[in-house]
Length: 300
Image (cartoon, rainbow, N blue to C red):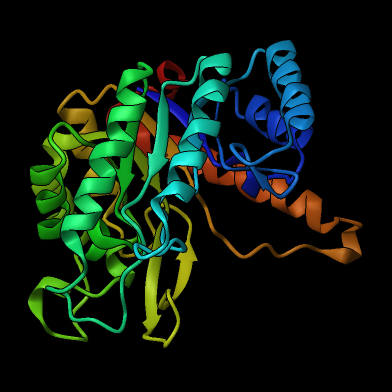
């Protein structure tokens, strides 16, 4: 088991992301954005500079938090858009020695019922995406976000059935603020523990965030209050205890999503508060690990 996180929540620039990682005593970053650009969309010269800084710091990018087929991408859009993103990501992953990349299964079609989501086209595309990464010796992991697979555990299992060998990154906070589409009840939310129990044989990677549902909205995401790990409805402690007890040996990535509150009277800047919040989140998660019987030092 090893600890990592979306360090762009600590700082926009890579220097700050590296600093936060080192302060925690960790050696890994799940890279999403650097200076506001996703790592597979950065200009070549900026990526070259980032690669040099990571090597000099001894910090590894363990996973690309990519935008490939994510909730903002439409299944009706040309597949070439996705293919080009995959082609950009592969050589960059190979240069950095990164083996994992987070993908999704395209945004939910909100003008269609749950059983009419162009599923066969999603399956076809993900088979192609997976093959491209497989052929390069890399592994894509699908996240249960606001996409087809994130509509509930039954949809994720249907995805795996039709994309043989697909691995998952399981996010603990997405279920409790997402409708359970399989139930047909518009106001029933998913259960993190129930989702996890059904898909855990396919889980190769974990995202830790926590939240409380507030209200349904007309937008893509329902309104939620994000919390410290273990203080929301994401069954974080229960899931982590199960991971420890069953010998899980993959990565666990922090994704705080917390609102940052900074104290101007103490001359703390917003950037300082972001850094402090991220590091505190990591330390609180380490305490959860310890309470569940795992020495955090062995996962750093």
